[in-house]
Length: 151
Length: 204
Image (cartoon, rainbow over all chains, first blue to last red; front, side, top):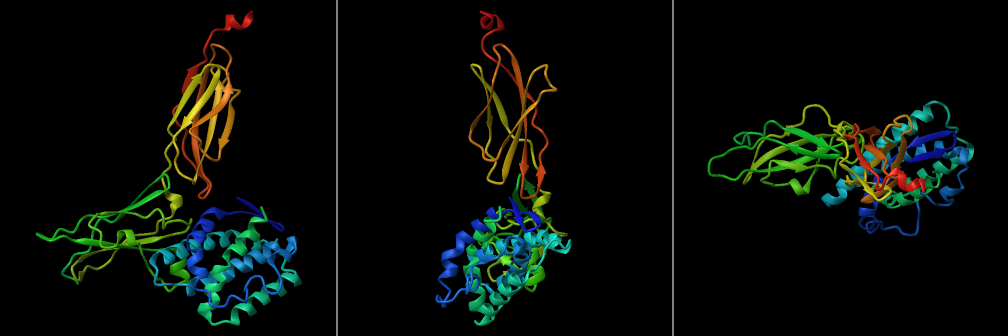
């Protein structure tokens, strides 16, 4: 599928990521002890990000998941671990494409998206790392829905 | 552990986005040797301390082949490894040399059958899984310069291509395309069928 993220046009196969997440979503969300808080949507929804900032935000969020989230989500459940690996490696592949566009300076990081991403990091750092990673993984569909809106 | 030899001749067979790890059996007279397989994607190598993930369907298996399709689900470089197990004894791991990326899969032309149903040109295509799209080319014999194309993102068993002129012969060929790896197969052999009836009937 082709995603129009600000100045960037990036082809990514979200189907496999979505399928992998759907297969483990209930198990992951059941491990999220803090239901009153959101990492991605607090205080403002991703959907408020201006379209010109979408490429920058997408690159930052994919980097956030690759660098900070997946590695702290290892469980004792082999099936869950395999699906997390599938998602993580797909994110790595997708981020490579986002980075190419980002590096061609087509991605402008506006003040709003910079502020929004800082808020996401603050939400993440506000919890212990395992809870924060598991909650972020449990919110993956929020990111996927936001990305799908860019098609 | 060194008493139990590690599996040899480990290799990956990959056709049409189906991937299998195979290895030679470890022969121990009078004993049943079992095997366990693990995989490592680029993510695990670069971001998760080089960790390995077991494939439960191929843990303590007596088979010498493992279907790794479900786990090779991103277009990145993977490594696979297998070891032999006999009771509490385990061999060293045998690891694939180099990396495997699903973009390396071999793509075969689709199986197709052209059908003339009265004046209708139909094509039957074998389903090859969700990763596959089909590009079908069809033309009236003798008019090779006026080839038409239909791209099928999902396969239903029979697809209507065109309405044919009475008695004329039409030809069809197809190739697959896998968007996830951005590659296409070669074309299938061309098949031609003739439409029912003859031209005089239409001249009345």
